[in-house]
Amino acid sequence: MFRPIRVFWNLHFLQTLGDTLKARQDIVRRIQWTLVVVYLSLLLIPVIWPQERHAGIFTSIGRFAEVMFWGIWWPGVILSTMLVGQFWCGLLCPDGTMNEFASRYGKGLKMPAWLRKPVLPLMAFFLLTFYSHLIDAHRQAGTTLLVVGGMSFLATTTGLLYGRGKRMWCRYLCPASGIFSVLARCSALHFRVDRQTWDCAPRPVPKPVDCPVLLDVRRLTSNEKCNMCGRCSSHRNAVTLAARTPGSEIETLRDDEIRAWEALGIAFVLIGLTYGAMHWDGSFWHAQVQRALADRFRDMAWMQDAAPWWLFNNADSGHMSWQSGFAALSAIIAATAGLGIAVSALLYLAAFGNLRRAFALAYGLIPLGGLGLFLGSLEHSLAILEMLGYQVASSLTWIRAVVLLPAVGWSLRIGRRSLASQTISLGQQRIAFIFYAATILLLALAYQVAPNNLLRQYLPLD
Amino acid sequence: MALFITNDCINCDVCEPECPNEAISQGSEVFDIDPKRCTECVGHYSEPQCMKFCPVDCIIVHPQHRESRNELMLKYQGITGLD
Image (cartoon, rainbow over all chains, first blue to last red):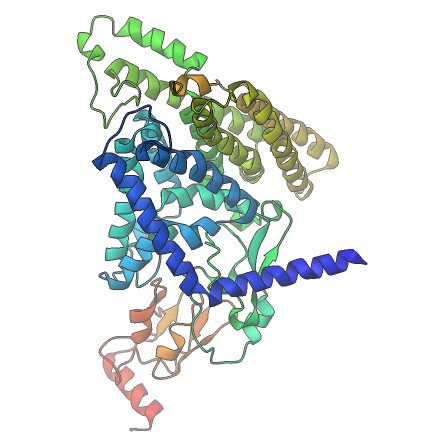
C-alpha cells in the first residue's frame, strides 16, 4: 500500500521540481551570476596575488581555489552527471552563463556547419585533458587560469559571435560537455516527453519552447545534450522531469543512435586517455619510458634544459625538462593507446567481428569508465586531505574497491541486456558475454591497481 | 521557389508565427511548408522570415518547387486577393 504512495510522491515531487526550475529562473539567474563572481575571483586572485605553494587551504586563496576546482567541483560534477544528469551545466556553470549572456548582445551569427560537428566536443576534451596534465594544470594557479580560464574566454567569445540568447558553446564546443554527454546517458533523471500530448496540444502555442542548447524537445529521447535547465518543463503539458532506471538509455539504444566515433571515444578518451593522464606519474610504463629516453638522449644536453612552462610543467619544481616532458607525453600516449586498443579488441571479439555490435557494446562500458574517471579525479581530493593531515593514502585501495564494485555490476548488467537484444543465438550470447566480462575485468583491475600517487603530490603541512 | 524544412528541424516553434502566408504547420516529425502558400516572403518582406529566424539553418530552397520571382509575386497576389 505504501509503495504506490511513494511512487506517486516521487513522480509528483519531480514534476514540481521541474516546474519550479522553469518558474523561478529569476532565482536561478541570481545563483548563476553569484557563481560567476566567485568563479572569476578564484581563478584570477591567486594569479594576481600568488602565495606560498604549500600554504594551508584556509590561509591561501590559491590553495583554497585548488580545493574548490579540483578537490570538490571536478569529482562532484562527474558523479552528479552520471547519477542525475547535467544539472551543473544548465543551472550553475559559469561558462554557460557567460556564453548565454554574451550571445544576447553579440553579433548573432549562425554557427558554421564545420563548428557543429558532433565529434568536436569530445576531441576538444581529449586535447584539453592531454594538455592540462602535461602542464600540471590542476596544481598551480597560473596553469589553471590558462586551461580553465581559457575555456571561459572561448565560451564568452563564442557567445559574442554566435547564437541569439542561446548556449552555442555548450551545445557544440564545450570540452566538458563532450564527456558529460556520454556520462549523462547513465543518469536516473531525465526530462520525459509525451509525444502524443505534444502533438495534440492546442494551436497556436503561447510561446516557443525555450531550450538554450537548441534541442529538438519534441523528439527528445536521449539525455546526452540536455542541460536539465528545466525551461521546457510542462511545455505543451508534455514535458516532465521524471525518474528512470539508471543506464536504461544505454540498454535501449537504437541502431541509428550508435555512433562509431562515440564508441571509439568511450574506449580511447573516457577510458584510455583519462586513465593515462591521471595515472602516468609513478607508473611502471613511465619508468620504462624515462629509462629509454635517458639512453636515447644521453648525448643531447639541451634535453635537460627546462621546457617552457606552457608546454611541459611540474607544479612542485615550477618547470620540467624537455626529456621529462617527452617521457610524460609518451607515457600518456602509451596508456591511452594500450588500454584503448585492449578494450576495443576484446569488444570486437565479443561482437564476433561485427563492428556495429562492437560499437553497441562499447556504450555498456560508460558506467565503469565514468566511475573510473571519478576515482581518478577523487585522488586529487584525497591528496589534499592527506596534505591536511588526514591519513587517507592507505585507504585508497578500499575506496577504489567500494566504487568499482557497483560500477562493474552496472556495466555487466547493461552489457548482458544489450547482448540479449541482439539477433544472435543464445550460445553466441554466452560466448560474447564472456569476452565482454573479460573487458570489464581488465578495466576494473587497471583502475584498482593504478599507481597510488597520493603521497607524492604534496609536502605535508608542518 | 518554395522553401523546404529539412529533418534538421528542432521543432522550436519559432518559424510558424513568422510566416505571413501561414504556410508553415506542424508535420508528423518536423514542421512543414506548404509549397502552394510559400512565396519566400515575396510581397511581404525582402527576405524569407522563416530562414531569418530559424536558429539551426534547416530551411532550404525546395528542390522540386523552383519558381521565378514573378511566379512568387503572382502567388502572393492570389493568396492575398490582390490579383
